[in-house]
Length: 291
Image (cartoon, rainbow, N blue to C red; front, side, top):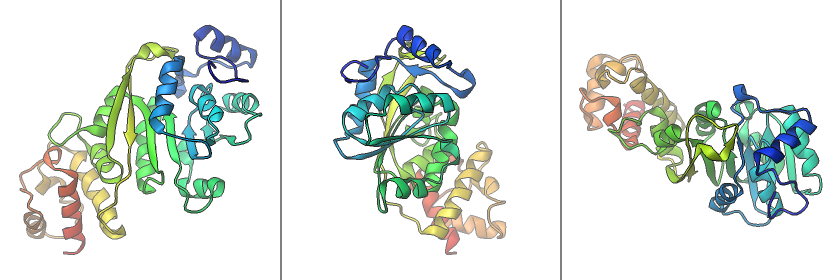
């Protein structure tokens, strides 16, 4: 890649296609494989991650290695997880002269993140997460990361534009939902810059955006947090219902007690989920857990 000595230049469809054909590989559309073919965008994503020599990072879905090559050249201690066996083998071969980079053929949706991070980087490690994510795993992956308390120092991730909007959405907006609330609780999102569909091969049908997630201190203890998840998911499962109805099945209490909990939290029973802030959902969870 340009500016990355010892590594092939895969920032054009022609070179990338040749590279893949030589290894008997081709993009799997069913897996959401859209390879980044713009070196400037790749460098811009890596710059946003602010990673220096010796710093730890995890990359999900490196594909043909547009980001991986830059990170390797910058001496980042990198663990790259690639589901595609052929691409993982090709990456391992390409990066064999970079001992600080390890490629694992692994499904990111089945990873126990705390165990993986501890095993590779050591206890108490908090690497940076970086990825050009396949669109179909974005939501499930984030839910998994949040359920594991988002064990990263920060994350710089490329998402489908609509997913990025959901992560950064504010209460009352059309994109606001359960994922927005969980993101605000664990690692608030900042949309850094848009990415055109033109810089991928094969070209996807939608544009993308690069998002930075920065973990924040959590305000609930373990029991309250478990209830917080149930409350948020139940509230948005039928988002047009008022809270007094959508939360009826969450608590093993009478309707009068539910109304009392909402009153103590300063939330109107007639309110709907999309109007509540993350802080209000957290307050309901804390009061209900300790009621």
